[in-house]
Length: 397
Image 1 (spheres, rainbow, N blue to C red):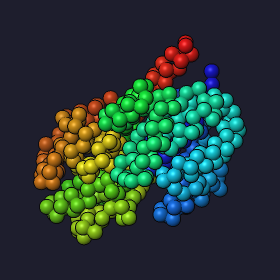
Image 2: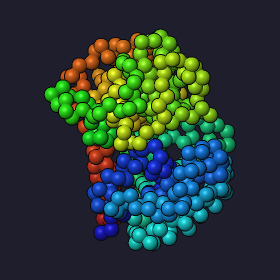
Image 3: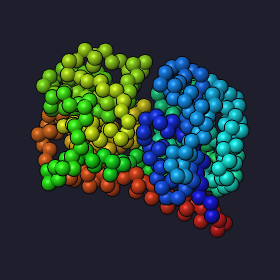
Image 4: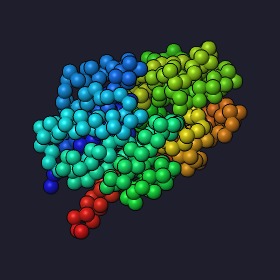
């Protein structure tokens, strides 16, 4: 029986390393042949994001590329702009996507793959590849934070996808509640952690030789350090971070990730002498950066954009054994025994030094143990179980 996956991702393989790559890499390790089609992009995206422009140009020159023994990546050609403002434009883009990707599906010999979708506009892809199963892995609320025509078009396109997909995996409780209204085969599968990777940041006094070397980017930054790993964009409460930096002048605030000044006001943060923007680093180097952090932060803004998210960094911080301070978010609440959750800015500021004072070896080990329950391997175990259960029921009809 063929075990192949045709995945249409909402990110590039060499972009921010997250859920999509983690899931597909694990399926590939389990013997599935995987074609990972990178995020769709139009000319407006290339103009807005220079890093994306150069990444896309490089990928188009490379064509189909193998990144593992049975995992390949390919990047879609430039699509028409406005897919979230016009259903007609989206239909044209999906026809282009089908025509372009079919040749790679044929080249790799996929005859009845599992079709795995991440974008809400891709309902028209279902049924075009002879797939035996279609999965919508909903890790973002694409309509969140939008309004008017764009919101209506995205909602209508996603409703079509939800009704046509065989299975829906939703990564938060609120997303699950929303999506199951359209599809009874909807399951909550939160984000997870590459526990083995991030546990390298856990410094165990019984095994000091296992500690990672100090990363040069943080070598000269004095302690204590409060750190954040991830994009600095409109999901991050930059005003809250600036307040914390001013109120805690003896602390250093380290932000690791790409900054998006077009969506986030960084002025106040940049004026703080104890705030350090380190930029992006390869995924392989991230544990060494987390290791240097005394407290890890989840400073998300309240509102629709973040309310539906299952924060990937929560699980990665836990895997590193680090004390965590977070703003009040729905998906963080169930970890209140391990995370200090702040409702007000005053609580957030006060929680940072308190998190370090309350920390101990037993708590650090406990966080790592909790993360192991929420590893990507276990997440994919559950996805695979649900997929094959659905197929067995389908074949028995």
